[in-house]
Amino acid sequence: MSPEQRSCSAVVVDYDTGSYLSECLRSLNDEGVARPVVVENGDADDARAALGAAGFERTPLIATGRNLGYGAGANRGVAATGESEYLLICNADLALHAGALAALVSALDDHPDWAVVGPRILTTEGVPYPSARLFPGPVVAAGHALFGAVFPNNAFTRRYRTPYLQGQSAEVDWVSGSCFLARRSALEQVGGFDERYFMFAEDMDLCWRLGRAGWRVGFEPSAEVTHHEGVSRQHHPYKMVLAHHLSALRFATGTLVGPRRVLLPAVALGLAARLGAVWSATFLRRARARRRTPIGPRPA
Image (tube, rainbow, N blue to C red; front, top):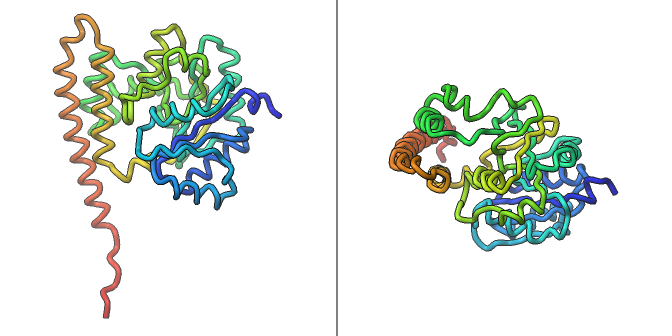
């Protein structure tokens, strides 16, 4: 049994990803995680059928009965993993590359003050996703909120997404919750994910609270995963966009303290404007996709 297998458990949070869940479990098995826990926020029967068809019928599956959200689902899975020192928490629509888990374990072993370490996340085209980020100050946050949806290469968004870190191991403010390795002791110290966040920003909030508790967060690009981003999100695009913006407002409300709280009305207005812009862009993109979809032949 490998050191990774002895010290790590894995929690996979799923919402109707079908075959992607099986691909994820195969990659975890290849990395030495013998029995990951799957938390199904969607159709548990479909998830069990997919697991059985792929030969993972003995994988523990927690059926939540409804979509609890990512953080709440992860918390349920963590509670069911036993006493392993390290916990890999991830979405179901991703796959670990060879050696990824060992690299993440080594990073936590080498940095005892790191509570969490995230891998380099690649798109299906092999392009690095900006998964290591800053806690944005008011100016950067406002610029990203106002311009990020329309001009994604603006200076504020580039600063927020710290592209200069994507090729080197480093201490960062926070990493994407779609995949990271965490110390169980650190998660227990801060109470895990804040379940008031349905989707989005629960990872940023977790890393914020870990930092307040004296921990650090790391980024280890030698560990790589491929993420089929948005597989679950595509079922309810408008609801997910709304959840994203509500979570951003919740994070701002919880972290803007002292005199900076006078900025909250401006933050709320900026997020409302951005929500409208993203909803409009989503509508137009889906309308164009429908127009491109070929119509079958008419019946004779």
